[in-house]
Length: 87
Image 1 (cartoon, rainbow, N blue to C red):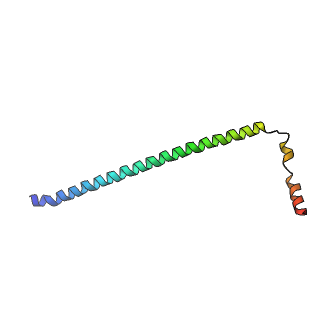
Image 2 (image 1 turned 180 degrees about the horizontal axis):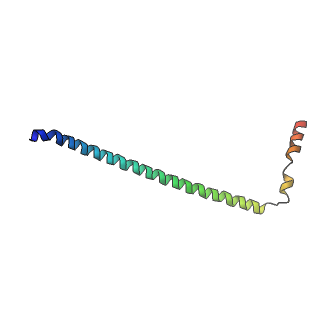
Image 3 (image 1 turned 90 degrees about the horizontal axis):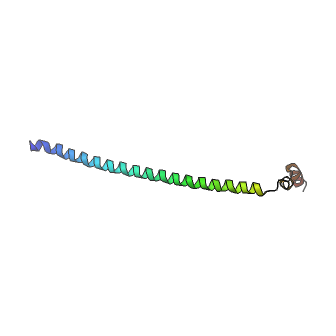
């Protein structure tokens, strides 16, 4: 009777080892995925912070800019093109 059970016991032990390996691999993949997600969230928070700084800088520039001077500082594109062609 023991002789007939030995192959089954070995197969059972092999299956248990495979199950343990699969669980370990799955847990490892879940951990890696979680770490990647945390990394993406941290990066997006950093990008969002940079965007807010850029918006603030732009708002500050708009507040400091003299609206009367800006249109005169911008050359007429057609006139600039015409001058470049004539040279």
